[in-house]
Image (cartoon, rainbow, N blue to C red; front, side, top):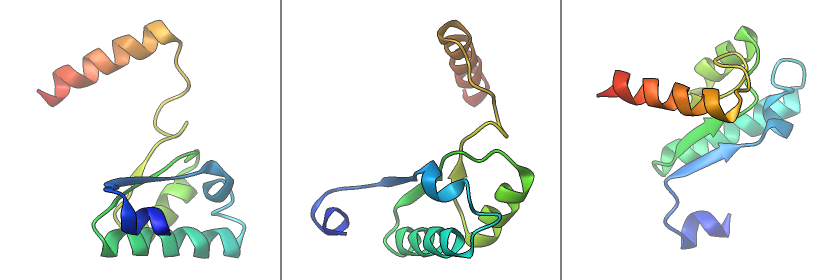
Length: 94
């Protein structure tokens, strides 16, 4: 928690050790909810990794404004395909 106070953090990533159990573990869900709420209150963006199911996504949508990454959105890419994906996404964003 000291890092939140002492360093200019603008984004926090929630590890898969918490996010993978969102659908079946109340404790994980409550911890993630608390982290998201705390980040929101101090204007820190939240990224949740290891989002693999629509049910996980639904729960995260209910918990607040977070960014997600995981197999639900895109499978693991080889370096060449990752470069091509990023290049295409940059063109879409322009």
